[in-house]
Length: 525
Image (cartoon, rainbow, N blue to C red):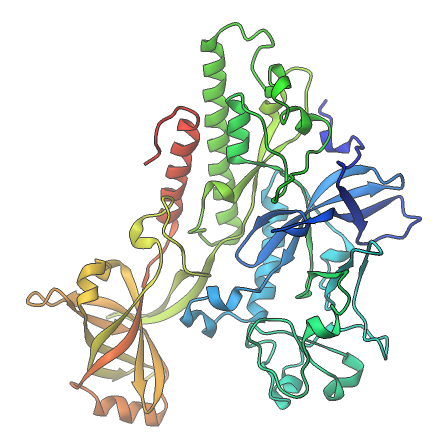
């Protein structure tokens, strides 16, 4: 029989407190946020566990009526502060609040089905149109209200209203506004995303809501908060414990939090004997220890591979951005027959970074759509992925349209042309990339998605391309026919590698090497 170690009630460390997020004082259990009594200079009052592309993960807990921690939790909160800066320029065509909301729900579903830890169903998990703030002085969570009307500030999703007032629409952009729903167009609008359009009917949310210094935004963008049982150990932390080192605790900042019970034991240098998960309490010899160490490392890597396989099968999307930080380790419990590290389980810490889009192609036999993937945001260079797949590139090229053909059945056009740039030869991406060509047509950019069909044997920096099928109006068709054979210098182009599962396999290979060689003193490079 396995007993959950997080089911043993414990008290908080000195310097931390729990602020209830839902449930009344009479509730048997309450969902709470862990807050520092003295804010950290860098992290502030909250205990951040991880930072993702569009979310922050904070430490929370389930409390009983005696203010004891019954279970440690992760609170996944949306963070769109850098969303506009992190997106590809071409991503704005397909990324907006509707896509982000669907992606957030997909992330919750994937976490619920794929991990070793449970995703809980709570009131905060429902779609919330109100932001959530923490009053540090009164130690309560509040949904902000307008001082005069006492109405809640809610997320405005009415595209027609926003457009009529000259503000950014909700569905088709990444910008968000709060308003007083009952007032409609007469309401003041509070932009809550950076660089959102403003005018005389808008006011700063910090001025209106956060006028009190004790009021701190926790979930300023609205939407559901994902609540998951915690997987506190990083892969590196788990491997350190395997190698006889102590665990550093949970949360960022100067002072981490150490839960009581088993996790406090592995954080204590003096109790790293049998409690560190060795095979035999007597530790009869280094050969036995090395064999167990190797077995647990191989099993850890095997579970990571199985978890990625299960996630890709469920989500139908590759990851592209897998690293050791993509995973966490949960100590499920302690059995009487084996040390507790043998019960460790792996959980996923991210959703797929892939966005799918279709390109219609015309072959000699038929017309079909091909689905491609590109990344949600540019991938930084990393040892976990091939250099050619690290990130998309941009360049200026000389583009010449050679032929323009119209399909009689669909009415769509397909364009053949050539592109020349010294960067093409330097990038060495020609044979495995998609080209987003921002072709100028009457003062506007027409985005062409193209693939290379061949290279010029005389000019290594020149390729021929063919676009997918696109729709042109009569003005665009006339302009592009007139430009056939004319070289357009200085045309902005983006080069995106065609990404797929082999990128995940490469990342997993590096992760496997990192796990197996951890603690040996061997350089991963």
